[in-house]
Amino acid sequence: MTSSNIRVLIYGHINVNVLDGSSFFLAALSSMLGSDPGIEVDLVLANPLRKHDVVSELEPYHNVRVLDPFEHGLRVIGLDESLRGSGMTEVEAGQLLGRAWRTGNYDAVLVRSTVTALALSRSEPSVRPHLLAYVTGFVDSSGASEQLSADLLELCRHRVLLCCQTDDMRAELSAFLRKRGEEPRVTTLYPMVPDTPARALTADPGRLRATRFVYTGKFFPDWNPVQMIAGFREAHLVDSSLRLAVAGNHFRPDPENRTFVPEVKYLLRNSAGVRWYGGLDRASARAVILAADVGISWRSGRLSNSLELSTKLLEYGALGKPCILNPTEMHRNLLGDDYPLFAESMDDFVAAILRVSNDHDAYSEAARRASNLAGNYTYTAAAKRFTPTLFQLVGDRAEPYAIPGHGSQNGEPGVYSQADGSIVIDLREIASNDLLRLAHATGSLPRRLGPFLRLDPRVQREESDNGMPLMSSHLFDLVVERAAHARTTIQPPPSLPDDRADSSDATPAGPKKDATVLELEDRVKVLEAERSGLRKRLIHVEKQRDVHAGRLEALRRSRLGSMQVRIWRARKRLMR
Image (tube, rainbow, N blue to C red; front, side, top):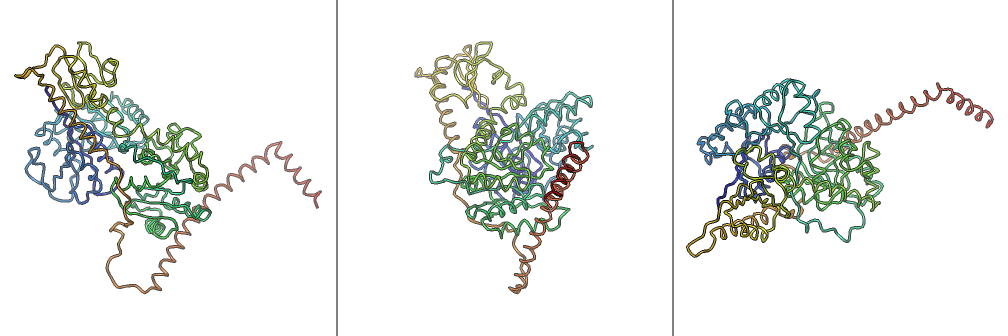
């Protein structure tokens, strides 16, 4: 049996030392491809590796390598020198990837950075048919910067395959480029989340109410961290059994509110019912989610028109947890207009917390929809969906292997017939005993590329000296290898981590402050946080007042309204 793996080079201009959705995207993409032992992945880092919280997810994958150019160079692919400094520029990364392409014998290159992808394409034109550029920073045509527009147009002229997160975003990008005279190649790479063993989703029979809430992610102004904790505190005053677990340590200052970060940290540390774990690796964060009942992904109204699909919603749903989130058009399309945990305003958010904790039917329905949605975005589902794109990048070597949509189903799951009489088997879908039976029945010599096996009756199998087919041992080894790989790469979440705030939050060494001073400082922080919350509520109430005043004035100006006002006045005089 001839056997060949698909080799993929991945780069994102992202610092994987930072616990962020972007860094987890790189780990997820590498894990998704590495979930099949027939695909080898090399992930090149943009910065020296200092923390392993993100890349620890890749440790079980023997076919995934994390290449740190600053530590040991890229000697494994023939580049001897190590880089210096704290990181590469996007252009430098493109040039380095060009050298890796020439020496590393790769079939495809996936790059999350249009600048890096363009630099790679310029330095190594031979990579263009095999290069995928994942596009970020493009929300719609009005939001594309001049530089991004120019880069995208040049990538189109190089015939590089562009990639977006959602179909809506792909349609927007395609229309944008066509208006400028290009005929782009654009595909979709949806968000993805780890597969979860069924035993990890076993319900707790003693749980009668959904009282445990969870948020895992970053603390940016538009992510509503202050409003989220303030709303939870309000709900906690009504029901003291409520609990909120929070994991994350990535804070972004708000230019409009210099006290934003101190407010968030204070609320995390000093709110009844709130437990803050600080920064966690992905497996530990999933353990925190698994221990909760309801996830939170409620964001600012400024993001309501976003074309992105929140990975957070999928992470909660993959672990069987419903999610409180905004009723954006995309969310309504995915979850239904009547999804019970939509929240737009602060009042909606508090009401959703109290409702889901007391309405078991609403909780069950929301959990069912979120879980069903997430099932379409697991690593396993994403890998199968991405196969046509991957084979498009691989090119001529993939031509003999029919993939779903390019061959006719042969009556068995994962088995496809080609026009020349050969059979292609998707090793991810067929059972081991069916594979062995079918391979022996055809009497042909199997050939493998990545997760696909091709049986061509025109190529007869060889026999050993004792008359036994040589392919028997090869197929058996293949079955054993794939089974072992599956066992090691799908792991249940670990136990809950201990409470820990990130070390970056530690107070620098210095003179010890008097207890009275510390108490006063804490009181000032409380007042500042309460003032900020009251200011936001006041703005909301004033807007509501203006809406009602406008409606009343419109009513007075109408004929029917003026008559009603006179009736009210007459009644008032009679009551005197």
